[in-house]
Image (cartoon, rainbow, N blue to C red):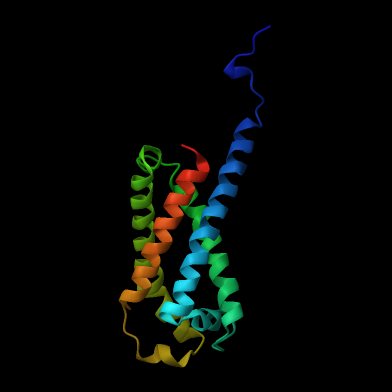
Length: 163
């Protein structure tokens, strides 16, 4: 007796979603690890990220933990966003196109998180260097870091999902 596509168990979609979710997490970790090195050694702001979670006390270890949690979260958001057209089609095309989608995502994260959220949050936890920052806060080095994150996120997700 032949089995048709419609005879597949209902849980098949849940399984595929879990696999895709896991790959989005892995892509977020890959992008976050490289971006974290840029933040700590190129920008010198990993302790400031830690200050967001320690009420203004700069802490590199907490900064790394928080940064990687953000990377996983944004990897999952990216994975979910690429299920929607036209992003899904673009992600299927080529590795270079997937990298461009990732760059767009990185720019969006920068525009929201660094330009607006970052200064407000640091001000809220009374992190002293934030007092002189203007809104929108638009430094170049974090933009470059977000572009690196986006390229690695988009490329990794494309390769892991096996479009």
